[in-house]
Image 1: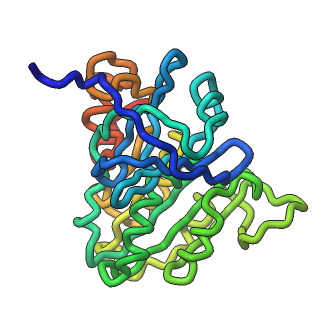
Image 2 (image 1 turned 90 degrees about the horizontal axis):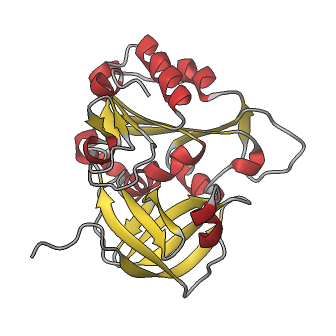
Amino acid sequence: MAPNPYLPFKAEIISVTRQTDIDWTYRLACDLNPRWGQFAEVSIPGVGECPISISDFGDGYIEMTIRRVGKVTDVIHQLDQADHLFIRGPYGQGFPVPDFYGHHLVIAAGGTGLAPVKSIINHFYRHPERLNRLDLLAGFKSPADILFKEELANWAKLFNVLVTVDKKNSENTAIDCKEGLITKFVPELEIPQLAEARVIIVGPPVMMKFTAQEFLKRGVAEENIWVSFERKMCCGIGKCGHCKIDNTYVCLEGPVFNYTRAKNLLD
């Protein structure tokens, strides 16, 4: 008998890191071997299940940055180290990271869109020789919403990291940030060789749309841009149809798409 694809396994919480008031990163003990940009279904028996991007992974663990936005995540935020979550996956198509080797990689992430690409940045932080250059544009609503402050500071030691907020306030933040949307700063990016540029954009749909347009104005080819859709991927295996855009099952064929295809997916 084939294994039940809906059957989750129990994973112990190794640690909980509070990124913001509502975004907490959970490190879970498990032997999953995901690809960059994949997601998993996270559940609490008797409460419900939700899709969450895998924000990082390593030997014997995965990490997920979970925003408290509803019934399931409210309960997850009540859990602590040594408690358990139920996991199934990983699911979907990830980023073709080896294809970026030797190129100039630009990552533009809006809000929690930084989570699905965190593992990619960490990969190149450990192996900077595999890229010619990496630029990171990370945009947030306010200083209080900035994720991965410690990692951003470390990444800035090796890469060009620009953190933006929609509006600065009087709040003191350890991260130096500029005011404005990511799209404001794309024209200022130094891209010495357009043919060598590879671009990843992750964030809200409207952010991805207009950020992609800015890169296209700069002359980056459509086939060198990738985006990741964050939709309601309920089953993760192309059965329920909640994530469909026209005839495309985002949970199976995405959430990562090359822009040549993504531009035709009307969300």
